[in-house]
Length: 280
Image (cartoon, rainbow, N blue to C red; front, side, top):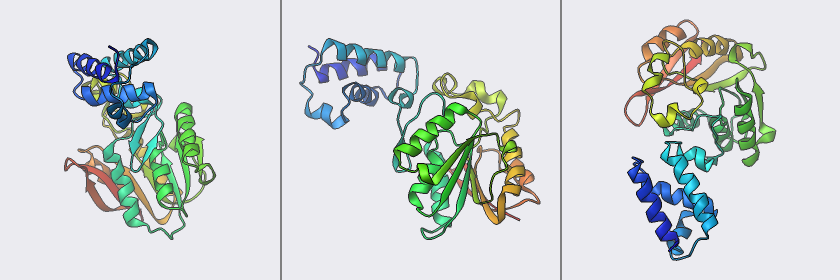
């Protein structure tokens, strides 16, 4: 029988046999996508019989997941902060640790302040869009070296009805000269090139390498961001960065004479993850 429940059970068993730890929830999410329904619908209608066409579509998605393709790419959706974002293989999948950047910005600035914000390496646009949704008087600018990432970010801005408050530019940070900003925020590529091969298969095989790789010491892009931010920020402006857990000491060296380090924030695993700096 091809009932919803039977399909879910088969899907979960198939993923489990292929070493997918989240086999049960993934089976539910994939069938929800095929049916274009919420997961609650599956529970309430578990005896509903599915057509062979729907079963075939479900099996196609199960096979993608079997090959360790991230569930976010299969669903084209990832929740970040308080919203859902469209994601595909052209952008990094937003991580919970990156929400720490948003948390800190909310603590620094209140709802009545008018600020111009620059997001460097915007990817899906999840950082700048989350900030603008929380702070109605902020204006945003976002850059990325990837044309395809900019396309995704623009699409997300449109979904969240923010087209009129954020401008996107395809540009590297060293070639960007537009505007003066109160706040610059960035989650740049910071993984050491030599350590890339140790990443999980679902990251290494699917996520864009240029959004992960930070050169031989992981600091290649930070050099450029700090140098350019010292020119693009207004005096007393803030620079908020996501960093690798072992990069704080090197970052202090890079920031010297240009920025004052206000504080370091740890991630949910107690590791250094976010730096808040003020332009000198």
